[in-house]
Length: 454
Length: 122
Image 1: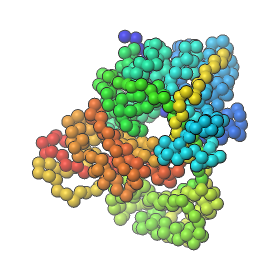
Image 2: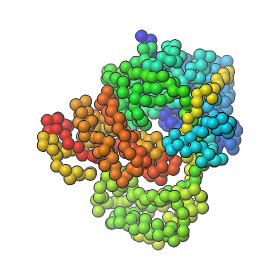
Image 3: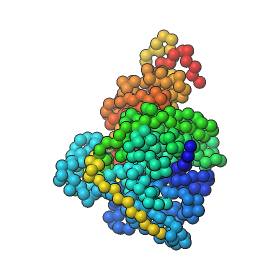
């Protein structure tokens, strides 16, 4: 049976820069999938584009392509990536320019997928009765008024398939689902119909495994973590997809990490909701049907995935300006480290209270005692070497948060003793851009595919 | 470790989940999910019986604000839990160190459960 090899080169914007290079040069692959987008990423990019219309995409992608294009052309490897963010065309133009600079003019076709950005259409959509209500709280979008910063529909694999059919070697998209970037090459290569629900679901499961990079090949894996080999050079996943919808998850020979039923199962359950109903624009995958089997060293066979028809809605990811926050920290040393940190927290809270500052929330954590597991961590050792006091505040207005950031440092001289760890200076006031999930009917959204020639 | 005051029922012994399962957690808005996976297939029925949504709700009392849902994936010897109101508002709003619920996984593995004496546990 024919197989194609789809490698994951990037699990998020900020992932290991070496990973895609190693995926391309470290063994045979047909496709390189790179996922760059998360909810918050889109709003950051939208803000960047508002200041400069030439940006608003994953900037790392362009120099990466410049480094890789000669190899990609020589080996006939194709790329699917949502690096385009809120400005896929600008990203594609940059890649085309770099390709020409490398003497690859006439040899690289770049596909661009747009149509996900509906920021300019919100008024029109709501006027026609689409409330874009918050999926979690049910609130209508009017609640956030004119504070919306970005609005992007999650597109599926279809427009990426179209770009591949039109000969794109590199497909750059806006908000296409992470899973669609892995599913699209399978649909394209095997000619799967869009309503072949079991195979669409299988490709979606492959995408879910691929989308977090090394998190399925030994990264962040709890089972036997101390003995996972050579994590300085972890192999990123390669999906060997077969025409019948089954696939093997593996990694290149000679790389570190480990691919086992346990490592793949952990990733399957990552960010999982109802496992029978994993909804994407392409279809609904049932994770309770998946069969896993160790198929040799560092090879896991995935089969029997069942799917159901796609829904008639698409998810929209909106972001809006919510308010401000800041987090300050100080470190207290033995003896009585925890007691000192607790005392400092009480003093700080009294001072904030006297200043009459109004916060939505003040949260204190003691790192080394309870920051990760709360009361489940139990009582700490009274002889602890050190404790970090970590205190955060949030407000709709910037002013009280800014005042808070001036109240940490004074504690060094006018609070409990044996305190250090303030070299970073005053904490920074951060703007909070919050996330607003909603649905929109599929009939309202038209994805577009353009081809840019180098 | 949270020690249960209850004695282990006849024919069982109490031990932390860590000895029978591994886990991974993540976020969706203000909800944390925990995938709990049996270290051996024969442990799965014990997890299914012992680690109920009600027990997990009690375990995280005071730490999460909403309810707990449980889903079974017998095919993967795994359970998936959704912990609502777990992340201090979630995403960018949260002030928590673990704003994305990454270590709720091991917080669950602290839970003590009753395990049949006949079951071979490493």
